[in-house]
Image (spheres, one colour):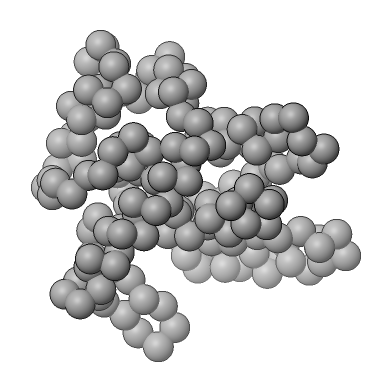
Length: 160
């Protein structure tokens, strides 16, 4: 739902079309499917990127509206903040109705702000929280690469 919403934001009053194809799975499965995708779509010059998010997508939603630095230890801990920020009155934020209300409140400018806020979180974590090997750099939770993916999409579409 989030990526569909972003597509509609990017495609408003433009003569371009941005679409997303999502593959859900572990990293090995995604790498294998990417290689197949690359070979089959190479002539079309499609761009695609890996994007993972923290097991809890709620933090990403929060970053659209405010600079958020609290640490939480449980998945449900962000719900109160999401409800407050997006003025959700029901008990859950994961219903289709609530997600539509949240997405309706997110603008393209909010997406850009979330990217900047996520970059700032990573910068603050660089000295003390980095885990890595020769191929990948990973940060301890909370962390995601969705902001890198979305920044690249916005750059490629001319919206950054």
